[in-house]
Image (cartoon, rainbow, N blue to C red; front, side):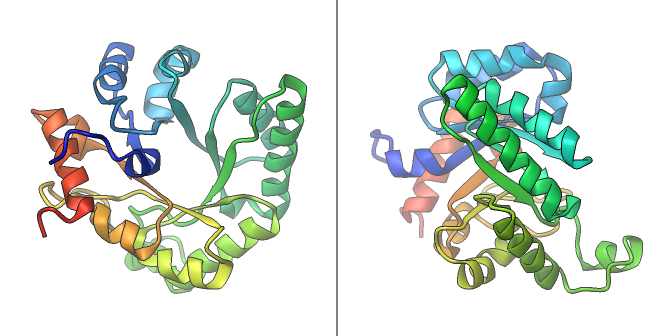
Length: 247
């Protein structure tokens, strides 16, 4: 693989910092900053290390995605969104199941914070159906009798009505969302598994190349990289896979 980083690919790659300690997270940021445009800070890391890791990512001139999946009453979501934006997030998300009104409140809080602190407005995404949920769970456990793709599309439509920038959705729904809601409506895709990695609890997955070919704007990589013995070699394989060098 060419040693020059493909900036277009880098800007669309996110790394999930799903680790327990600040030292682990910092090590990943230091090592992989050249290959990822954004680092995703989820509940596992944030509940242990809070603002410290966010400050560290910003010191490295990288973007962070606050992946806390907000879901609460509208006033609480507005204030939470305000605080997330105040801390400089480039992306954050809410649960689309929280209603159009709740999502509008997230956008309102973000706009006010961006104005108050003279910051760029982050991309606000709505989580549709988690990639760990398949048809069986949806229908039998959650008692939602809709097909997953129909449900995802409706939730995505609600997010667009609320004025959000896009959704978090599995690779299975990328084409449908783009077709119905337009190419400018962002689709961020988790559940990405490179060819060399093994499957785990995720039910609806795709390779990085397939997700991009289907129209994903951003993809999230996690354990395939963070748990690899040679993390640099692993991410280089992902770049090669996306560029088609191994096809």
